[in-house]
Image (tube, rainbow, N blue to C red; front, side, top):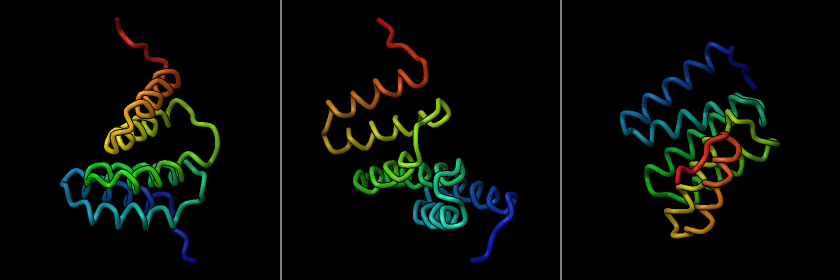
Length: 120
């Protein structure tokens, strides 16, 4: 398999994000999938590619696809506070399915990992 440099992988990541922001979700998904293929599973770049796929899926209302990408991103081990956004996306995808209690649990896990507190 061809290997890409860090700069080339970064360029694909930026392009994927730009496509997502422009609501060109099919193109964004294509680039995020390509990026994932060129990253080591479990690496930060791989998690970011999976998070991008999850964001695209949430944006298009595809909760099942989002959850699959989130599970893949989270399968590499314990999450750091930098990965806490994955929990927000998990909550969003569960909410899309009407699974509000599970969505709330994911939100609470996010708050714990990110160090934020619920204001009363």
